[in-house]
Image (tube, rainbow, N blue to C red; front, side, top):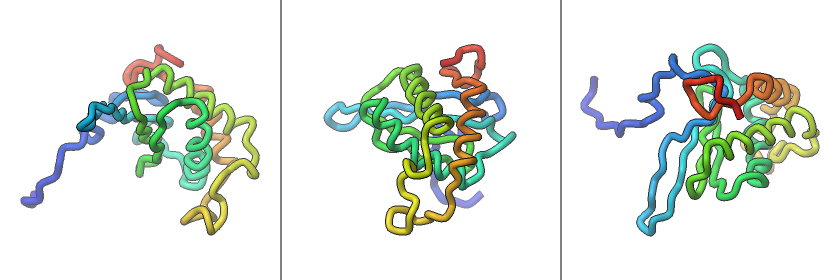
Length: 163
């Protein structure tokens, strides 16, 4: 091992073989110098190391859920996909309850699965996206339906607690 110093990242300390997706997990709450809270959530849609959302579908979910979630949950700063393509980091102001986050995710995925049309998906041209050719509404719908069929747990280790 080299002598390069790396900060410890909580997500890499999580035993990915023990979690049971789909789930919403509060990773951490950070407090700024003026007391403002920012909460980081693990929005895991696919079981780690057993599957991954293809990039085009994940890309379309990302673009669409970014707007849908902001209409359902106050204080959304960002929702960004994991490089492993099994879910998203959700960063929000404050400390919303994981059950409220799960309900907002569920409603947003339901819209993607059933209501969103191609014309609704933002950022699908060269001006508004850095990889606009890599989208699939079909894949986004299929993966959203799959997550909804399984239910979203608010406990990463217990599938019986569903939102």
